[in-house]
Picture 1: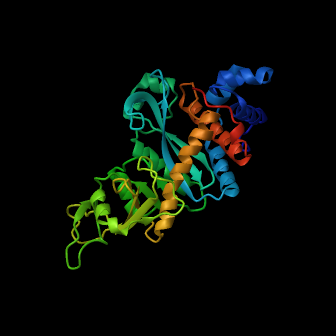
Picture 2: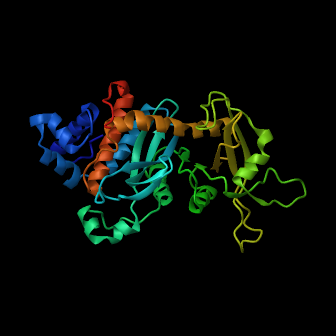
Picture 3: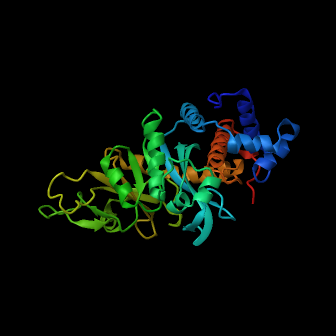
Length: 370
């Protein structure tokens, strides 16, 4: 993991920090890790290693991805958001954000994680911190957080797309599907799916406009309908999904799924050509609950229904491992303010996550802080 670090003292501190993340109880702050290590390293030296040193975190993330691909039967990259509540306003990227999971607005950082996922385990291998235009225009805060000149303002969807592109297409790794769950996909993400440059399965909202190419009656012109309406018409195509966990909030009965061919509507002025690219709309739910419970759009049109549902279910695996492993090795625990410090901390916490998973020590991890 640390072969890219140019100096032996950096590699030594990397291993020390990693050991601290794996063994310390409570918050995995630089101070607490330094206290655990005792005379081996001072808090000042450890702070410099994380926040002010010059080492690049990207080679470590790429080495991590390569190691995980070798060790685990990775099926897909799962791209998922992470919210990190903060008390003040000076931690890099912190803003007021609404959390659908909590049903409230809170002061927080928002980041995108890219996870190498299989049915048995998942490991985060790449991260991107969302930065708003207000942060990039605020010269004092930007300087204090040492945000690099090349950073650009992004919405959460743009942040997710760039993280996915970098991991899936920029690291020379084996091509795999990318599963992207932001709740509802905005238009740029739908267009990226339709473009087909990355193999994608993307969660969409019920009001997403689509053309139901499979459901149009013979001789009738295809019309644009909402994703919810299309999947409602496809109710008779539902069938049980063996081995699938129930859709959250949709009851405990046997999971159901259906998929139909669709396309994005033509934009005004496009005329009849080019023809819309074929896509597939996946619906999931359970008996006895409103149908559909979830809607997913994919350009993986050749995959059978069972394969698509297995890809979607990898988001459950990531959610469980984020709570059960990543949080217990301190993925949200960086207490500094700097852009570089945040990225270095989450990189080393991702390595700690991989060590815990691959070494089979997840049950021995200290409980997460709070």
